[in-house]
Length: 207
Image 1 (cartoon, helix red, strand yellow):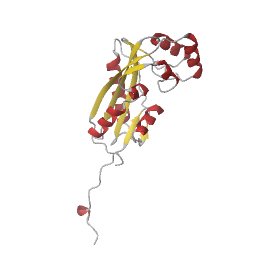
Image 2 (tube, rainbow, N blue to C red):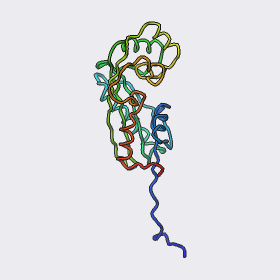
Image 3 (cartoon, rainbow, N blue to C red):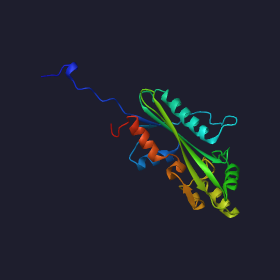
């Protein structure tokens, strides 16, 4: 006997996950905890800090702006949209995502021998438009860098596009004797908070 439409089991809603990021590091991080986004779509937004903007609100604002930009697209509608932004700050000074060798050098010279902070903004928007945001803080101690260490690091090119001009998961790991807080936050995405946000807002693995 064929079931009538009214007697057919209700289909589960799609639990598509879209990562609003251009960073392959975030894809790799999610893979570490068994999460593979259904789509990875960079958000094209203006990332310039506002006048007098502090690092923590800056990180939160960019993460939310990225998430909302993708949530409003055809690919983002009806999906969970996850976005993040990593901000390196020395005091109240927001360091750039190094685009040139000279910019990376200035960052490394500033951070050399000092403690700095890495703020990780995370925003998750659900299929019904609910948004949840948070900011993770990690304190980083960078050793005093010699000129030849900076020169060698700049020559390897690893700094390109990295907040603060360095990548702790690469050669710059030798520059950091201690951190206080989440390591994955420095790399690009705090995994513990991200997983908690996803599950807390109803996303289900393998759904």
